[in-house]
Each structure stands twice: as C-alpha cells, then as structure tokens.
Length: 219
Figure 1 (cartoon, helix red, strand yellow):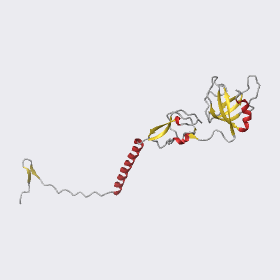
Figure 2: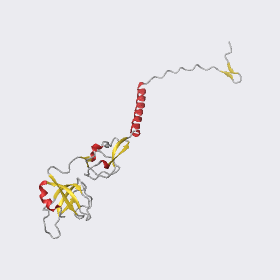
Figure 3: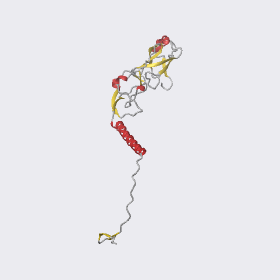
Figure 4: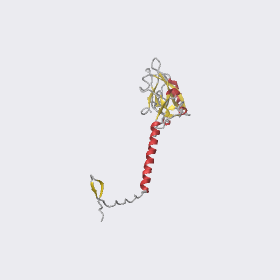
C-alpha cells in the first residue's frame, strides 16, 4: 500500500488530510424582512427631503415695521418683508393687499409676523351710530392710551360752578380715532355712540364736561 503522507513544505513537516468540508446550505430569502428594509430606507430618504425643504428653503412674508395699536389702520409704511423657514403651525401673510387699509385686530409690535387673524375690515361705526368728538383733559381720560376699537363709557362731569348741561346718564361707545395732544394736553377722542343719544352728548362734548372710562381690561 502506498504511503499517503503529504509534504507541502519539507521544513513544516507532514500534513495529515482532514475530512471533506461540509456543504453550507443556501440561506432562505425572507421577503417580509426585505420589504421592511426597503420601506425604512424610503422613509429615511423622505424625511431627509422634508428636512431639507423646511431648513434649506425660505419664503418671503410680511412683518411689522412700525407699531400699530388695536383698531389702527395699517399702511404700507407699517410693513416690511422678511425671509423665513415656515413653521407649519404659523401662517403669516405674504400679500400686502390682504393687510394694507385694514385695521389691526390686536396690537402689532415691530419685528413680529402678521397673520390673517390679526387684521380685520370690520367697521368701527355701526349703521345706527354716529361719531362725536370728546375734548378731554388728562383727568378726564384713562392714563392708559386709548386706541381705536376699544369699548368705553362716557360719563358726565359737572363743572366747578355746578351750572350748565351735563350727561344725564352714562353712554356706551367705541373709540374711533384719538387726536394729538395740544399744548394744554387736551386730546379730542372721536367716539361712536348710538345715534339716538347724540342729542345728549354733542352739547357737552366740547365743554370739558364728559369723561371717558375704559371698559373691562382695555378691550
């Protein structure tokens, strides 16, 4: 019988033949796992696209350049434009025609964005109201500045002599316009009041016999 010893390298010594290697069966494909992996990859790619769109893309919208009080009419000079990445929860206005000429439903502060909810085109004078100007001294109006749209109550203030007409009862109204103060700090405040009460208010409106009280919490 022939010698079955093999020498691959005389210096390394004999190599003893081992058993034949076991055949590895092919792995079974799992379609469910493959589908899940593909779905995860696609979801990650979509999330990346959305992140790029939200961070990398900016939009031009309107912002407040000058303060506008509640009820004040918004002009083009009160606005500016800025570029921002939009937050889905905020919907600022980008078209000036939707804002200019309308009134501020809330106080607009410089540097803030403008939304549709913050402007209104509602009229401050109703069909059954008239506008009267009330001349007031510093003691006849609130220390808090009055703004268009605020609800007020007109009250009678008798003069020091006690003579002359005055308001018989309080009259509710809405501030329409606030004029500038003169050298004596007298300010004329235009107020919308019921038309049927105009005959009571107008005779005393410019005589310093009407005081203005701000209703509620300045609403």
